Length: 165
Ligand SMILES: [Fe+2]
Image 1: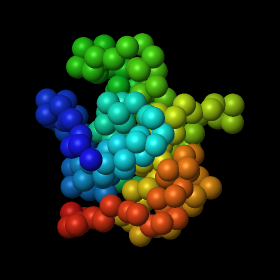
Image 2: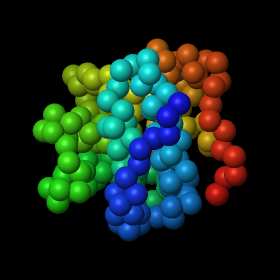
Image 3: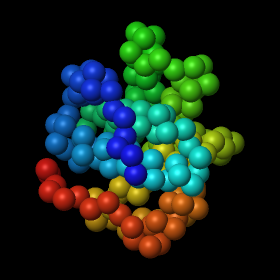
């Protein structure tokens, strides 16, 4: 697999704004695994790869704590909007909507009538697969894509080599 293209300046800005420890359970090593899972899944789901990378970097970037922070996804969507307004993220209107939806809904969806597109599904599944880092069994009923379900069933997880936490 190709190494993901991560914009170092963007990462620097996100880390400057991040209020928690980058070494925490929702910090940088989690972001990188979400990107790796997402890009792997994208091979099958056809997800937009640059958006998957941005989701990995941004979805947890506005957490205020490492436990229950129910609005961190919506906060991340607002942050995405702000970064786009500042021209730090250069996205088309459709890409911006997709990334905001992926961030806003990644913990509990966006309502019963919202059907996520393959890119959003891939982002959400990538994040779910990394629950493995915390020792949780992955509930395949909460996964959207066949690629992620297969991965969970076959227990093809990215191991956390040296946990920081
Ligand atoms: Fe996450």
